[in-house]
Image (cartoon, rainbow, N blue to C red; front, side, top):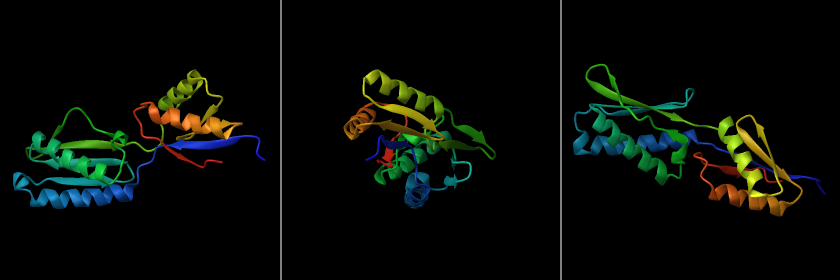
Length: 166
């Protein structure tokens, strides 16, 4: 029997589902009358983990983001992992664009915040940061399940998934 049980808390966005949601959203945009002649587009840069939304003006860019976000939500993608800027920037040719960052993994500052919250909760678990994930260990499986439940109830501004429960 193992002396310690562990699980990994991760935050992932499936880029294939993001791409499919963008395709569906663009079909809707192309069929909508209010987007006629607006030259609206959404592109995914998988290497830079960034979405670029472009349209005629900033109102249309915001409306385009609403459509895309609705498609993401319908597919179960965590909207917390998309960092939407406050301002829409002006682009060439009297157009507007917005760059939305996709957050993959748990940032170090959020991981430290999660570990501190676990310590304050009084649960008998230990947390350690490993690259872009958080490993939680304990001598008891019950304590780990309590930690998972605790982490689900807190708002750490990042969506958490749990894997490798051993």
